[in-house]
Length: 124
Image (cartoon, rainbow, N blue to C red):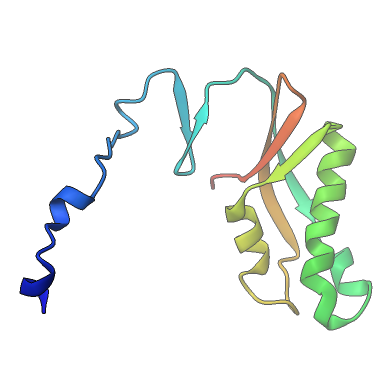
């Protein structure tokens, strides 16, 4: 059947240029993503208490509440115009399921010149 179709797979594929993070100039590599080089105004490390999530609402809403508590905490302390929580932080909060979020989480929050705050997991 393949002989009847007479298709050359290599000709049908478009050329793709692959660059590694070492080859990229003037760009910052953060947690596997290549982000444009931006001026970071402020960088802070916080330990966010999430224990309130255990006492508000039902058991099946605890982790949703914990994410909301994290967002409110960062908004209160960093005063951003826009807030991005990185997937690694979200995965850490959801790692034990919807009923048992962590009691606290250690984060690193960075604010750039556009008043955009990004929340990462703190190392260590």
